[in-house]
Amino acid sequence: MQTVPTDVVAAIESNGAGQKPRWSRRRLLRALGIGGATVVVAGTGALSYRVYDTAALSPGRGDAYDPWQHWRDTPGLPGAVAAAVLAASPHNTQPWAFGIRADAVDVFIDPTRGTGTVDGFRREQYIGIGCALENLVLACRARGLLPEVTLLPDGPTGPRMAEVTVRAGAPAPGPLYDAIGDRHTNRGPFKATPIAPATLAGLVDSSGISGLDVRWTVDPAPRAALSRLLIDAAKALCDDEQQSRDNFAWFRGSNDEIQRHRDGLTLGGQGFSPLVLAISKLLPASSRAQGDQFWLEQTTTVHTATAAAYGVITTRTPDDRATQLTAGRLLERIHLTATSRGIALHHMNQITERIDREAGTGRVPTFAPRFAELLPPGEHPLLTFRVGYPVREAARSPRRAAAQVTR
Image 1 (tube, rainbow, N blue to C red):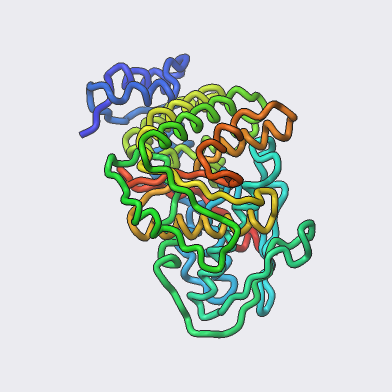
Image 2: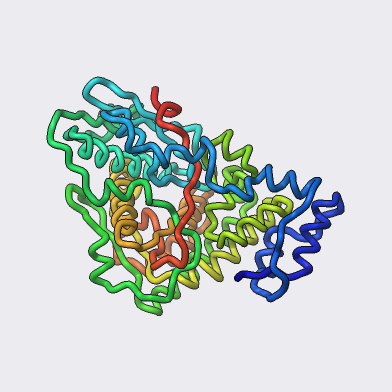
């Protein structure tokens, strides 16, 4: 049984009695590894309100999570869109919109759902649209609709990111389609079990995809170098006032915010054990500075420390919008394949976010040349992720329903 120090229990009780908070979420999480008395939550006043406000005793429930339950239920193109909205996206911004016609789906980008200076060139936004596009294609096939994809049908600056026309065919579900409802970003610790190179290679299906490569970092020395680069990039992002603000804007600290926005990052998505998650929700919400510090600590002690391997999707045309959309399709394919095989995946894009930030502000590049040393000549990184066998399953993230994103 996991235990919590008695002084943590006292802190929770005092916070619930209207006294000045003495413990932040970050301080609690650092203390949870120490022995002590088992927590029994029973209280009134502010503590009881925190239980209600954060849904501490019923995480992952409510309308914001219903799309994960019902994505298979709807037939035809509306059902395909219901699967598309479960795709990965930067900071869970869900930057997509869809137009359904009799025999086609138009995929649009919602430019208002961005992360500001964190994604200054909107690279990640286009990749997120590509992830949704891959889910849409898989769901069409599973429903007996044979899809044909045209990227940027109105040109690079046109309104549509893709047009997916369909014709009748035999239903063709498969393991990737079946994995859509189980695919979640896992920010928790991974086991020390290594992943064989052949297993990593088997996660990549590049059929129908050109202009992209997946580079795996497995060996200790280059893995340590990439870990250091990820930590340094996280620190640089936190030290950048505007990036820090834009990053924190997508954190949903209460159940009310989650149910109202149905997007963004949550405590439930940080990979905590059930007990740590429940207790952390009872404490006062972290400030932006505390959130930054916690992310940096997690990057150092959990994310990079337990990564079995890193994957980097690279290209020679990093600024091409069609390439970015295609990279999203490939990324979603990798994540779904990993999910179907019991391998966890965690998107870690702080290096490319800092590369773009330095380029956008005219600063002397520091992260681009360091990353270039870890890649073949001429290849540019589009995105980075870590993989490993998970210690615990990842939690669901809130989602807007298909009806909310269909024009």
